[in-house]
Amino acid sequence: MDSSNTTSNVNSQVSHAGISPRSVIKKEDGVLGYYFSAQVANLIVRACARLPIRPNHYTFTSLVLGLAAASLFTRGDYSTNIIGLVILHLSFIFDCCDGQLSRLKGLSSTMGHWFDYHSDKIKDGAALLGLTYGVYHSGTADAWIFMVAYVTIFFQFLRNITALNRDNFLLEHEGKKDRAHTFIAEKGNQLLRTLKHSSLFKLSDRVLLFTVAIVFDLVKEGIILYALLETIYALLSAFLNYRLFYRFDSQQQKK
Image (cartoon, rainbow, N blue to C red; front, side, top):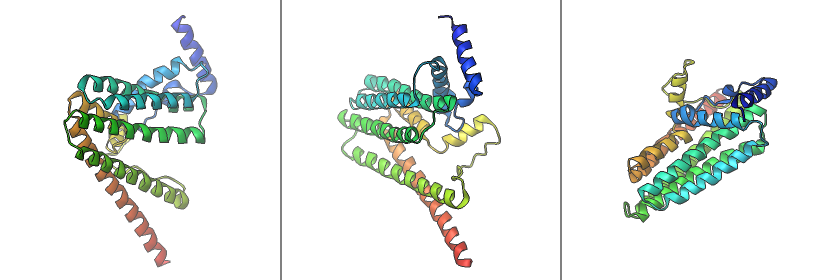
């Protein structure tokens, strides 16, 4: 097939919808997510734009690949971890595809958002547990490593639920979600924007942490660092809730 004709057909379809294929790349993401995974995902979405693919198809593929990677991580040997890491990156690329296709074709749905959100949590937790079991199975760490993984998941849940409570409160009282609390100002610069969102330790940054830990064979250390970061972010998120709700109660008492 002539690639120029394919590009012309895709561009024709997109221009008819009034959306540029590049504009659907999510700019509010970390360094790995924006500069690598999202760029590869954009090529896939543009190449497959004329196929009868729905965003949920990409989400399901991403979930299957993520669970496959987690399964490989349980082996605990270096070569298998590398294979699992490649599959994990493919999973994250397809995870970027679902949102881009949704924005490109206007296929956003409540069910799709729910499926995407929860599949991300499942993949994230499965990868962590797979690596944890692999470290234990290889003899690199004793059973205490499972407690570290438990602490990570516990504080990740705490961070998610406190952020959700804060968003719901602000939506109810101010009509908007909470802003990102970081020391980095975006100022319209994409690099600063990605650095700002990387400082929030999002999913793409956790994938980056897994990548560094596996490539340099420091999986145990990576799990411990993951637990430490999630603990810090969860406590900071809880503090933001305390400050927000305390101020609100104080203002209500003054009325």
